Length: 250
Image (cartoon, rainbow, N blue to C red; front, side, top):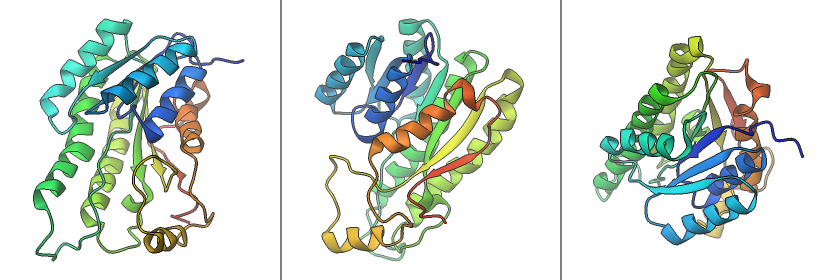
């Protein structure tokens, strides 16, 4: 089997479950050694690491609270110390606080603030730290959402803002890092089949009805798009947005 990422080192944030775990598997299948982060799911992270090692690559999990930007430099230092370098960064870890409009007096402002710290400033801190350590011709893939381009429903203003802001940072970072051959792109992910608690059947039906392809995706489908952008085949793609959301933004 072709392994275009053999000899590369990848870091996938939020890699203990869902899209992060699927991405870690896809990168390992392409030959990359993989580090993942987790915040509280130590057992699940350990299972993913064992599974990746079973695919014939080196793997490690690091505990990190992405909302604490001060932890970012240490994370990158730990990855480089463990694997000898860093070639691929997938910023997947994120929170999703939604459902209440901005004028709702019962909105949990503290939870919204934590989401902003995790989804935006936390990601920026990791990119800044990684950019200093990443080897030339590296890859950075940020995971966004179609909601960052088209909100579509009430109650998503703050979540949309975190993803829209990350989109702008992606494009700016692509300009900054291009002289070193490092590409920076975004994949806008959509509704997926994961182990997270689903919304009510009525809410889920309404969300799926907004899609051109009216079904939930398998995380492996979006992981394939991420792995493509991390591969040598995507060497001339940077500052781009690849929608993997069933046509939500069509």
